[in-house]
Length: 82
Image (cartoon, rainbow, N blue to C red; front, side):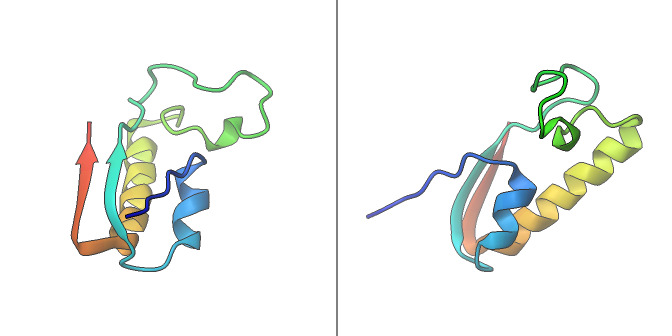
């Protein structure tokens, strides 16, 4: 049995994976407006989820992420959201 852990921005990794190829997704999405995960000036700071100006934009971003998750999740796969 083999497995791979991807450590990168979710919307950078998921599009590169084949459809219906993932057995398990474990995630803890950032709360809206709670904290900054990358320091000011970091090259990926604009990709941080949770810093959107409105809660509606944050929800839209999460929907985008979970649509990408659904595309790669197998029919018998599981997605754990904390």
